[in-house]
Length: 143
Image (cartoon, rainbow, N blue to C red):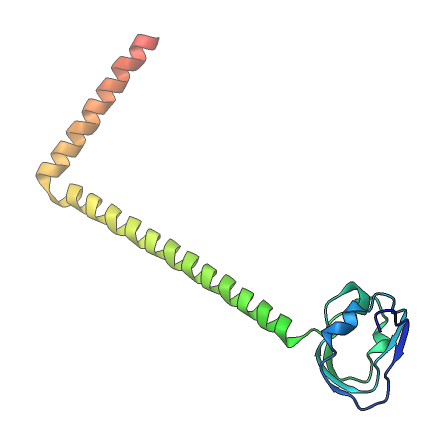
C-alpha cells in the first residue's frame, strides 16, 4: 500500500480522526476524503497539506491546513501563549508601579528629613556649599 497513487474514500460515513499513516503515502497523487464524519486535525505532513481543501470538504469538525478552519489545539496553544504574555505584562506593570512608589517614598523621606530637621538641613547646605567651592576651585585650574 506504500505505492498507492490514488485514494477516494468520499461519501462513506467514515468517522474519527484521519490516520497519521496516510501521511506516509509518498506516491499519493489524488486524495478525496470529502463528505464523511472526520474530526480533529489533519495530520501534519507535506503530503496531506499539498491536496486541495476540496479533498476534505463535508467534514465539519475537521480542521488544519489546507482548510481555513484552525484547530482548537492551536487555539489552546495560542491562548496559553497569550496568558503567558498577559502574566509577563502584569508582572512588568507591578514592578514598575512598585519601583515608582519606592522611589517616591524614598525621595519624600530624604526631603522631609532635610526640611524638618534643622541639623540635617544645615549639614546638607554646608555640603552643597563645600561642593560648590570645590568645583569653582577645580574649574579655575583649567582656565
